[in-house]
Image (cartoon, rainbow, N blue to C red; front, side, top):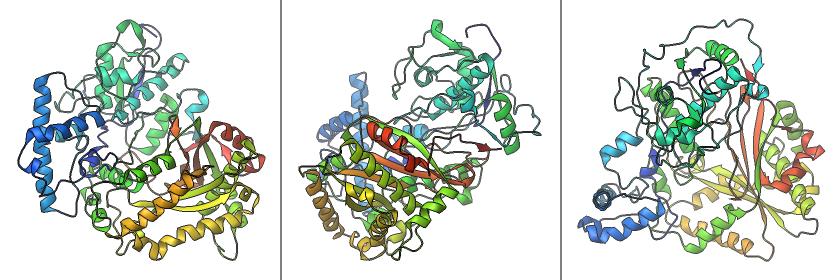
Amino acid sequence: MIGQGPTLTCTVGVAFLTCALTTLSAAVPVHEDTSNIFQVTSGDRKFLDNDVVGAEKHFKVFMEKYEKKYDTREEYLHRLGIFAKNMIRAAKHQVLDPTAVHGVTPFSDLSEEEFEELYTGVRGGNADTDVVKETGPLPEIGGLPESFDWREKGAVTEVKMQGQCGSCWAFSTTGAVEGANFIATGKLVNLSEQQLVDCDNTCDIKDKIACDNGCGGGLMTNAYKYLLEAGGLEEESSYPYTGKQGQCMFKPENVAVRVVNFTNIPNDENQIAAYLVNYGPLAAIGLCCSHKIGDAATMSSFLHSWAAIFIGSPEKVRSPNFSEGSTMFPPRDSLPQKYIATMDNLWFKEGDYVTRRFVFHDKAITTLRAKARSDLVPNPTRIEALTCFIWKHCMAASKAKSPVSKKTSIMVQAVNLRTRMKPHLSDASVGNIFWWAPAGADLTMEERELNELVNLVNESIAGFDTDCAESLQGDEGFSTFSNYFGHLQDMFFAEVKPDVCAFTCWLRFFNDIDFGWGKPFWIGIMGKVGPKFRNLIIFSETPRGIGIEAWVTIDEKEMVILENDPEFLAFASLNPSISISL
């Protein structure tokens, strides 16, 4: 509403938030395009000699790959000079530490000072006492319901995707404002994060370098101050999200919601629950990470360290180890193009993909584990039972969609290699240190008993506990990977291409991360995927740990079949209430 109606008071659940989550990529190589520099060694004279002209062709590749644009010739030359200096620095570091890999990253056109300012650490900031109180008033905590879900009241918009942009501060801001506006007006309005990304450069009143900076991070308190000064937020429809920082296109006449004040809330969990029930949805942390940077274990370690710094517990920081992975898996200058094409076939396929959240409660899981038992696997894990149950019904959906198809179905399970290496790698090892355990079947296997599929999957994963993991290590490990890629290539170039179902387990990665206001009530995995994707199932904990959530992404027509499969729904609940325990 514009200039009328009830006052909007936004409750800030996370007072100081930054989204510089891509920091790790500065030390992790991206093996994706053979035209890029993946490793700079002491013998590579074009950078050691500071030959800027020779560096320019690599700089242009860098600009194209990371969609860099510079407004003037002077800015172009300035960034080219920084790029060349960074490559010299990378070469020197390569000589000093040959176990690591140094080269081009998305940040290679930034000076050390610029990178430190934009991408390192949690930004500080202090609440402006002229606008926001230190903490809000303490509501009564007696008589709170056992569970409460604002989605059921219609106060929460659908899941949004921030993409590869450190704009979670903007999404947290709009989420809180959307909820407050719903309570004030009874209307759910989808508000514009892009307005904040493009237009908000507000700095903290005391910490002058803690400024909102689009995809470079920001503070929700700063964002609220901006909204007070700008007059409010436009709707998403009038100022749509692009995931990139651009020119401010804000039009005051399009303001849909105004904010007149805001407050921080106490860090006490009971008070947080009371605020949630009485004042609406609270802001949340958003996270976007590319697998070019690392795997789930890498991000878990990063988030635990970020949280430890945030609450002032440096002894809990997990110092990232950038060299262990390179020691086990010596880097190569490039990956053969045929293997890159094979991985594209494995992971990206044109289609109409949708994602649904299914919840398996403990009782259902116990029943499935009993069905999955066999002489070979007398005590299957929860994940083994769920993986094979979902795989079985995905095969059934694929067969129902194409009854005469002769496709094979390949299940691949992500396996963390850190604990399977000799010696073991630490949890702080940075990178994509996992591999896929495959199991194959034709679509008639959906008629088989659950325990038969569990036997296949268990055997595949057990292979990493033997000599298989060791064979992946060292210089000779590339031969093992080459053989694996060769088998995949044969399958994907066959006349009938296989279905691929990828499974990954995120249990115990994120549920105990505490930034000082308590552990997460709930963790959502993903929103809408793009037109090029693959069948993917991600497992995570339910609130209060009373079951397992499966975030299933498959073909839209197959999803319709799965959603109406009575045998599947006898064990799985489709997108039930989060039912946060208060």
